[in-house]
Image (cartoon, rainbow, N blue to C red):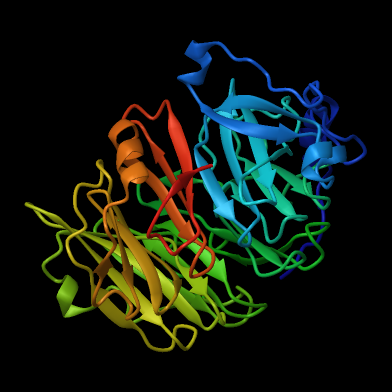
Length: 429
């Protein structure tokens, strides 16, 4: 059952007003007025609200350092994603407009690749749900429906120089986005959600979003007769990832239950894993919340973080697979610490290469989190955590290079930091 492209004229009518006011693929985004070889002076009160980053104009970004046209701005970053050791994106919202930046020199300088300010956002954008970049040239941004407006898809194929705008064949809010390559991707959407239940529709593209095929849905069946190969309406999608054209994982949270669904035919048929979230080690948990599944390294390895809640404590586990989800290992993690003060649950780059932070100390594991080696407390990181105690995100692209985003408790200010020695020492970006 496939429906390619825009099937109904009503979808065209929905998108026309947005097209008139927003960006188009024929127009490059306006850049701030450059100040050649000078630094913009910002009042001290503005500096309190954001991080200082150096912006270069796109036309001089590839020039030698002394020939770059650059200036400084203060911006409030809310998330980031590393694309390789030297390249990453970071973003935040300013007056409901997305401010998106790209660096290709380890965060020394950045290019503003934001889409049109006419496309408004009300919530923070989350990687894997609202924004995905398979590589530095190809990226997707999702503006979910608000007040009856259709969900908008923004797409760039030139590293953010220009953005095109489109929509899915049907209405619905996007719950998860995953791309296995620049051309091959999936979007899970839901038109109706009620409590911990939602209808679920999965779309796939193999031509970089020029057309989307509906490959799975659960709303056209009687509630008591939904095929076993389709994700049921019970449960809300937490995250989704695909390793290739066939194999994908999706985590779902129900009222007090969690489930992992696996597909091996590109998303048409799904089955619930009998192994994941059914361990006796989790029996004492009064509630379980799964994290987003993530394929690692050779794309047959994957990791799913798990949070276990009891009356008196919160503990953390990780599910690991080395065979695309055919078998799983559950590993209990040591106590993480205060999640509001210098702590974050483990993240993994490979099955045997992971990091966590506990009360301001960075730890490293080489055995799927069974044992952890603490690094000496880093002076600069400790100083920054004193002002920005809440850890938002930690990601390592290689065994050496990683980024860390920290923020204040009121979430009004943040700082982005990096490590080039595997997490032993940290410096500001």
